[in-house]
Length: 72
Image 1 (tube, one colour):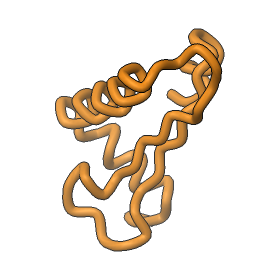
Image 2 (image 1 turned 45 degrees about the vertical axis):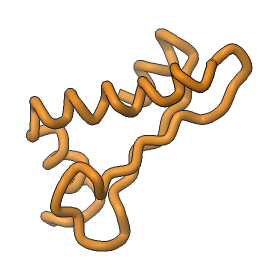
Image 3 (image 1 turned 180 degrees about the vertical axis):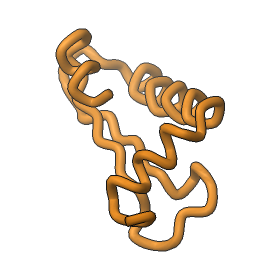
C-alpha cells in the first residue's frame, strides 16, 4: 500500500504496529511524511481513511501484524 501511494500520488507514509501489545487499531500508527503541497487537513485525513478501511477489512491488520512477527 505504501509503494502504491507513492507511485500514484507521490505521498510517503509509514505504517507501524506499536512495540507493546496491539489490541485495537489505536496500537497501529499511520504517519504521513511532510512534503510541500500537503496541507494539515490532508495529512490528518489520510491516516483516518486508512484506519477506517482497516476497520472494514481486518485481514489487512492481521497481515500487518503477522509481518511484524506477532503471529510468526
